[in-house]
Image 1 (cartoon, helix red, strand yellow):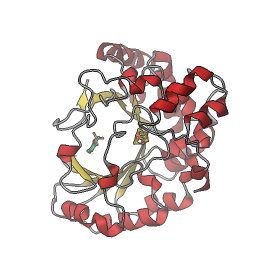
Image 2 (cartoon, helix red, strand yellow):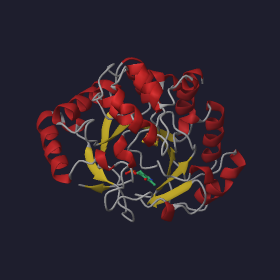
Image 3 (tube, helix red, strand yellow):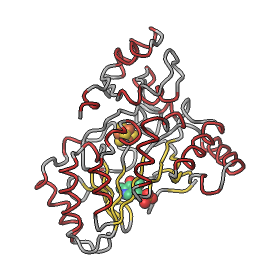
Image 4 (spheres, protein in one colour):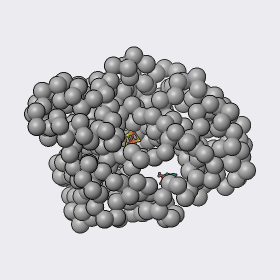
Length: 321
Ligand SMILES: *Cc1c(COP(=O)(O)O)cnc(C)c1O
Ligand code: SF4
């Protein structure tokens, strides 16, 4: 995809494109050695030039804080993925649904990402390498729903995605297909006519879960892509992460809730940060999170208030807070 190839891949490129203060440069260069910078042009275009506090920039700009020793309780496998991987490329943590790690890559590198330390290289790449995961799904009739995740599953081409979906359709006890993707947000032209047709035509009931953290993300080509999905008849949900300096105030969270409601997207989860090494500076304390939830309840329609959750290793689902 051309728009992917044009992405910004260095902190220098990001700082120069937005005219950011020079003192950000050295710490950013150090931090991107641990997790590279990666920002699509469409996402960049929604940032305010010259503003180091821009809520979209904060999600993707490497900071010196990332290179500090992690606070106690922060780990490289924060959510217990390693223990929930019965075969390569598949995570089975919760009853009735299993998650396929379909792609190692993303079209954006979010600095708080819980998968910044994930051993993607160990997961399969060619279609036949997926057979053990497909057979695992075949052999467990309790699984009704498959989540396509990653990385980002829409990093696959539409042809490859169709092949995967067709293989999943052959498993009779599967009824639903869920696509967890950030591409409609950061690289909206990935929502192609072929993708919309695939979601309309599969016998599996599709759900799409996108990931936006701030109302400023949901404008222009991104809003158009979300509308196209909704008009396609595909239910679209959003999950956000509560992030200090990005969306940790009531006005920002309410604006996000309103904007999602206007677009017909369900405000599904607000995640408390996974305690992953290098992301501690994004953490918002639980009591502050609860106060923000109370303000959302007071200001938004009920359906526009998300569920505040945390992912805990060994829990039967996301833990409500
Ligand atoms: C989050 C997650 C799911 C989906 O959980 P829901 O509460 O159904 O959205 C499924 N599998 C894994 C491994 C997950 O991490
Ligand atoms: S899109 Fe999701 S998986 Fe990819 S870097 Fe961002 S948070 Fe991580």
